[in-house]
Every structure is written in structure tokens, then in C-alpha cells.
Image (cartoon, rainbow, N blue to C red; front, side, top):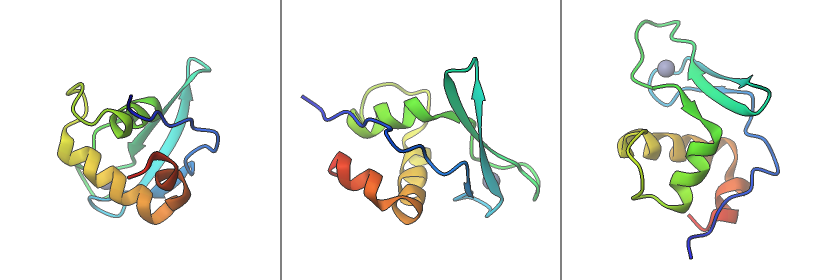
Length: 93
Ligand SMILES: [Zn+2]
């Protein structure tokens, strides 16, 4: 069984984008989902909007689903590794 991450601690609401060092901001939608997106202040950015829950699922089951491209996931994982190492330790990455 893949280990699922519980986002007991929220990701930082603002963190640097792995692509262009813009800010990635989180916003709550439908009072339930937290979406993260790059502000894109330096122009069009390759980082798609992603859902917090999607990242948790990808970390637990890296091969399932294609909504977020694998290379983007690895960018986000490396971003998290710097900003929130405790989170990834819990997932065994
Ligand atoms: Zn960006």
C-alpha cells in the first residue's frame, strides 16, 4: 500500500516558484481545496496551477494520473524539499 500524506501542516501559503523564482501563492477554493499557482510576474510561466491534494496523491502514487506532468511534480517535490523537508520525510521520499 502506498503511503498517503496527510497535510496536517499546510504548505506555506507563499513560496518561490521552481521555474522562474516568482511567488507561488495558495488560495482556498470552494472552502475545501487549496490551489497553488505562480503569480507569473516575470512573464508566462511553465508551472501549471496545481491542487495541494494532487501533490499529496502524486507523492503517494507517483505513476497514477497525468493531470500534473511528472517533471512538474519533481520540480514541486524539490521545491518542497527546500521549503518543507519535514513533509517529505513523512512520505518517505
Ligand atoms: Zn513561476
